[in-house]
Length: 195
Image (tube, rainbow, N blue to C red; front, top):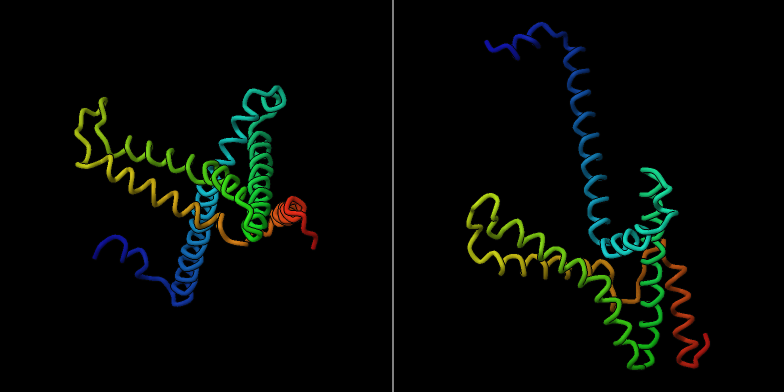
């Protein structure tokens, strides 16, 4: 007999039931915890352009330097929310202009696409190229065709972000619905139509 089986050898049925229930609850908690962490990482990835822009805007300010720890995180997240809301405002204008066949919607789409998708896509490309490619300190060759795989990974990441933002669809996150609605009203005003 091994040590583990000896440990539970003299357990009563009630103790076995409690141990099994505790193990199930622990596994359930770990599942919820991992799902929550994964969701936060996914959201941070999807909104990475807004997070980076917010950080770079705040980084040199005296206000940001005076904040400590979590206050800085909250300030970055709040500004990132405002930047994302600006993107959804522009998206609202773009949707209305496209519906009224005004070619300016293409310009707004390009601006939103570059900010929302292109910046994270380039970031993913360089991260993958760095991970998969030759590494001078480690003196390893990297995997073959690492540039191709880096490009594929970057394109997949950009497509995923584009899909989640839905730049060409008439939809919005509930948290930014106010900005999208204002954008649609501004778009109607730009086209000379009133609702």
